[in-house]
Length: 107
Image (cartoon, rainbow, N blue to C red; front, side, top):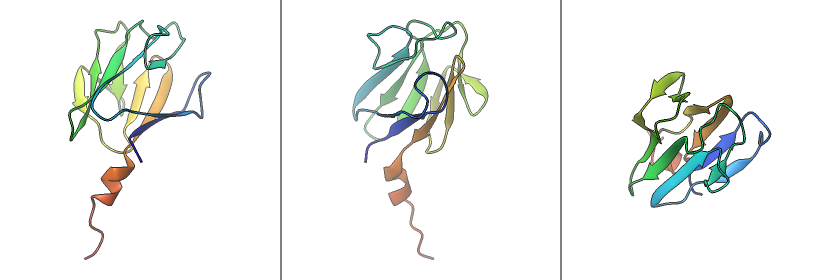
């Protein structure tokens, strides 16, 4: 299963959006974004999630209201399974199921 965003709030609450593998996934108010969030507090092009083949990175695109991960305003940060992303008033959980399979639980 690919990495996903589980949308917690707003008109799209409950939706699960799959992220692509390589490249960028854009988030913003414009319909041309991969994930369009129609909310006044969200910039037209608010942020993006980049996948470099190994890690997912959340990058703010100079948004007016900022992009937050686990309550901290970021300009760029690596995403981990379970991170809470906030864009405007919308919260999303980053889920990377394959990260769980990488963890060896045998002791």
